[in-house]
Amino acid sequence: MSHKIYEVLTWASSFLKQHGKEERAAELLLCHHLQITRAQLFARLRDPIDENVHQSFEADVRKHVYEHVPVQHLIGLEQFYGRPFLVNRNVLIPRPETEELVEGVLTRITQLFPGNKTIDVVDVGTGSGAIAITLALENESLRVAAIDIAPEALEVAKRNAERLGADVAFICGDLLQPLIEANRKVDVVVSNPPYIPENEIASLSPVVKDYEPLRALSGGKDGLDFYRRFARELPFVLKERALVAFEVGAGQGEAVAAILRQTFPQAEVEVVFDINGKDRMVYASLGK
Image (cartoon, rainbow, N blue to C red; front, side):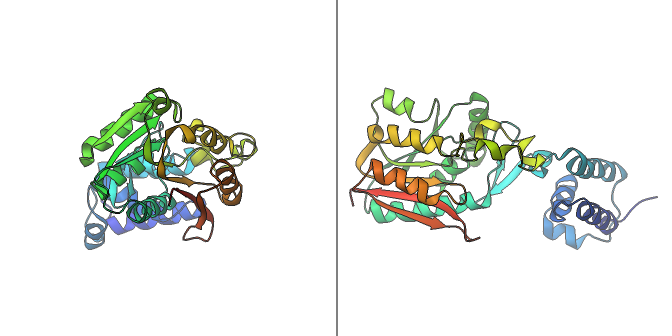
């Protein structure tokens, strides 16, 4: 007996809700399996659903509930800044709050470098490439490089750059070491580094801790290890006038700001809160 699309969607939504998962996952998965947009989905709610599609959709819903496989891995994509990015187990799934970091960087670049023809930007720990690729596509005067320590993450980032038509140079290396070794200076360093304290990793939801790369999550004992390393390496790679932009864990803003102030006493350092009222971004402007 054939089911109608709305029946399948109703079942999935209540099944997800019952198991403490977001109901919206049902829509995302169903659009993916039917290969249609959300608007088309609502226009076709009364249509019958192909039995094979129904079965594969139901299997994915169960995987999400019982095995905690992230919806983005089941679909293979996550939207970021209005663009689809490929994601898998080798990269962190881009988060909406990171879009706010990108926006903050774009705004500050126009203030700090008015009239500059080319601005050298590096995104450190690029993962899926979401930050680097978005910056390159949103502002064509940026010359963007992206560094990651994991070759398998860079593979994903390169595919995303190709698919989205972004000109980004990808470099395999540890934090800012590739730039230091090449004696290369840049105008902007942006990073969303691992910032979760070690003892909190165990309490993360299984969707995150079992499927997202640990190296992209753990920031050492207090979560601040990478910011301390940045503080040591940044002076070697920044031009006189420069911007540093970090995403931080909620509650870490002031601690990260203090690390930057100590390294760059002359810099203008600001902690910025995200749309949910959490301290999420720290910016340092040098040579203003």
